[in-house]
Length: 273
Length: 345
Image (cartoon, rainbow over all chains, first blue to last red; front, side, top):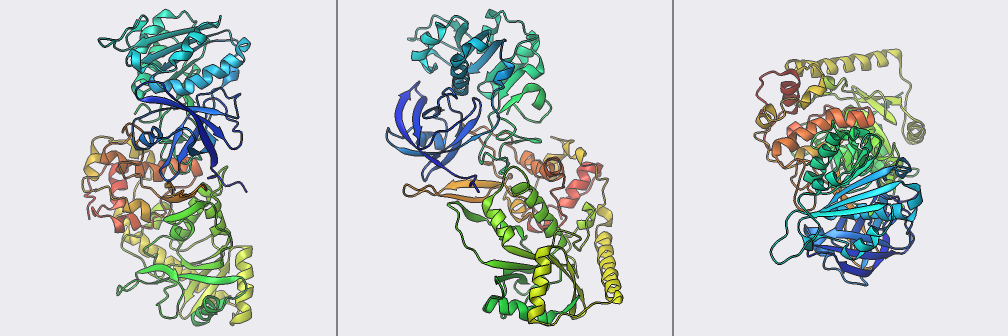
């Protein structure tokens, strides 16, 4: 029998500082990992602990995996101290994926903020690998300030795709920084897109408060509850719906999520906290 | 079938000292300190007072299948076969919930499953009750009807034996090889039933004022009104969850030293502030009353919808262990039935 707590060893082969607090570490696992975009992995630092992260690479890439991590707590501070060549462990993949088949032939809207762009990059790159299947992709990305924007070097490449619209907004532009795109919370960008909200899907991922108001704005625009997909952040721990840390009423974020439709979870308690 | 208590203890002693068949370990409730009737699970030994009947032990039988601290990667192989005897009905129910959670669905905890497979469970009818016992409020009773391998009902200095599984059947055959087992009569069965009825009535009488509507959906009500009040003396120590026969929330600690990954599972508690905290410090239940309430919702609503069984077996251990002297039964009654009862004992 397969041990559900099995760890796949992986070596760090590249580290990229995306912003003062966010870095992307590139891993080469000992055996290939087939995940579906939207699913998450448990990353182990030997002797320190483990925490859930979503890969930010296309799911067609199985030999290597990027994980984008913000320095925000005990575990992530240790991750930010790792060096190229260090050994880490991976468990997974766990949870639900983005329902790509429901995006086919549609005008997909992706709304992301801060480090929430990490799973969305995985979704976006996966979609790009089969771009002919989708009518269009509108990717709206938010960040606190210009220096907090991540994946900077890749954005110009993404913008070149004919049926991709990539727009960014920052909350504030502090003195000394330059910015020639939108200023304001990410939802201001919604005014700039002309998608029929009745029939098209939307994906939201970001800090809880952004997810909450992003979802409410989409509903106001006319998006249907069952067409809004959210990546819920809870403390996923074991990955099997066993340890109950990520419980959301009758759902577990790790097993029944992290990708939920808004219609699925709107009646559960404290989903935005 | 009937077996003399002394004969059964002799069989246990032979198992523990020399090993009988594949069995080499016997775990039974033994007397705890000077307190009459109080017991905890311990390996069988001639020097300890074994209490097979009586009421439930202080620690739940969960501790023997799902240990407070246990290595789950890599898995240690080759364990001994064992008998766990003197388990009460509330703990048998607890094991049924754990079975559903840890080996009943898509997920199988390999260590839990191994312990279950290597263990033969002998339950016994309660012959006394603790002041916190309330199985009858959960439509249970102080004797097991299923979920055991063998069940023992005390009749004077003998036990009336009931077989609950093939494993139990095989053990009974083994016992018969070593010590005398006699046939039972209809009168014995009637005596067992009479004892059971008497004991059940005792539990019902003890909880007469605590009977409730059973409309557990109502636990969701009074979110920021009554819940903060009923949890006023809760200090968030987590004793209630650790001692609960059905709580199985875990932490997976990484104890890797060299290149080989080592994972150790230990108990977590939803009563602790760090339990659901995510990176950056946010928590869905930052306040004590929210975490306190979560345990009740989990027992009566979440586990019910996950496993189609209530997560409370009525053992009353959480009340016994509570540092804030909160009576679990009174909280349930006060919130579901909207009555003004003092919950602190």
